[in-house]
Length: 160
Image (cartoon, rainbow, N blue to C red; front, side, top):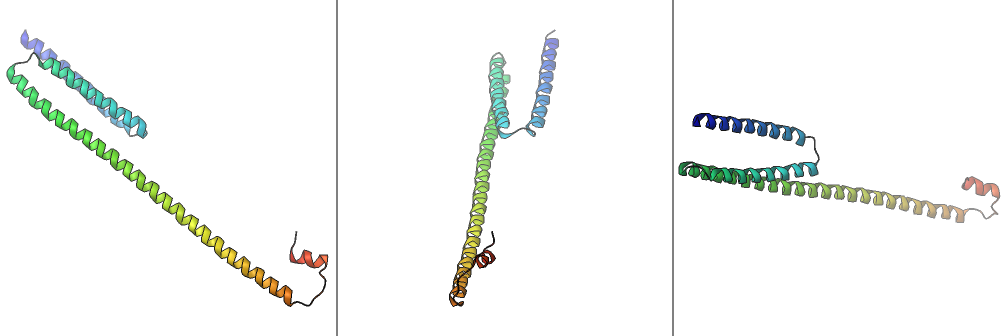
């Protein structure tokens, strides 16, 4: 009878494990299609779920034998190390992402500055050309034979 109860509990735990694995697979598939905010929310939700599972297992372990308690403690230590590593990895990726974004923003700003400098350089060259053309036009006007300009002369020089 005890074996049957134990087997049933194991079967339920395996079924629960199977459901959790499927949920993790579904979460991964969904995460590939989500934006950063939704993904961060999923990660926070997963962390909360891990903490809740940890609390539930600790409660269930209270009635176990000494050997089982020692094994549980060892497993709990390994799990805690893994969770801590996952948190550290996530934080590292988050910092790397922020760093990468800052680099992209800096590159974009530098490209904008380069384009603005090129525009300014072009404007300066155009201004130099316009000033020289104006000076040449003034020299031509000053060296021309003096006569009174007619309306036709003005229209020819500067069409409307």
